[in-house]
Image 1: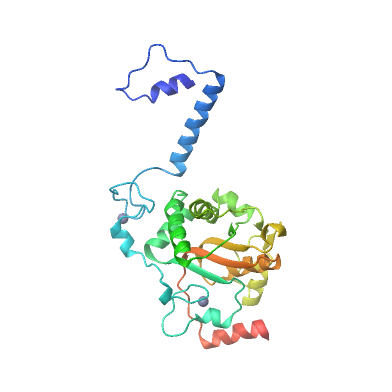
Image 2 (image 1 turned 180 degrees about the vertical axis):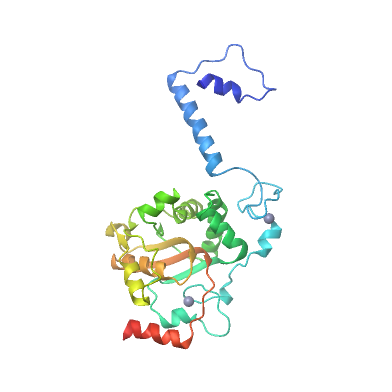
Length: 289
Ligand SMILES: [Zn+2]
Ligand SMILES: [Zn+2]
C-alpha cells in the first residue's frame, strides 16, 4: 500500500480531505512514514489504553500507576518496619536482619523491594517476563521511582541486572533494562546498560552446592569498563530478588571495579524459605570449612 493510500485510510470519516493538499517533499514523506511507524511500534509495545493492568477494568483517567484502587489495595507493599535492614526481605519476629543476612556475606550495601512476590505481583512480573508484555514496565518503573524517592537514596548511575545474550535474544528484551530505563527518566539518574554484562548462562544450577553456585554465578558477570563505575554509587535494578545471590554476584564484580556503593532496587522480594539450623550449619561449613 502506498503512503498516500495509508494516509487516506486512517483519515476520520468526518474529516474533510482538502482538494489541494500541500504535497510533502521527499524528506517530509520519509519523516511522516517514520513518525507513523514509531507510533505504531509504541502502540504495540506501550498500548495507551486506560485499563487496570491487573483486573482489566477501565480506569477513570490516564495515570502513572495503571492499577485501579481496588487492585492496589490487594498488593502487599513492603514497609521499612517489617523488613530486613539489609536486604529488604519481610521478616517476622524480632531482630533487624533476616537469617540469610545474618549467616551469609552480603556484597551489596542495601536492597529494597516494592512488593512481596506473591499473587497479583507474581502475575504482573510473569507478564513482563514471559508473556511479552513489556508495557507493564511503565507502571512498575513508577513504583520503583516512588520507593527510591521515599528511601532518599542518592545514586550516580543506574545499572540493570543483565541477561546473557542468549536469554535476551530468546525473550527479545531484558525486563530489568526496561524497568531501569523508565526509572532513569523518572528520577533523572543516568543509566548504563553496557558496562555490566552476563557472560554465561547460569540457569541449570540446581545440582550445584551452595558454594559452587556462588562461584558459578560470580564468574558469570563481568564489568567491561571499570572507569564507568569507579567511585560511583550504583543503583542496581532487577525485577525480583529471592535469595539475593544474583545481586550479590553483580555487586561483587562492581565492587572489584571500585564502585563506591551498590544499592539494589527490585519490584518484588521473594518469600524466603527460612533456613533451619541444620541447613545453616551446612552452608557455614561450605563457606568457612
Ligand atoms: Zn484493577
Ligand atoms: Zn536480609
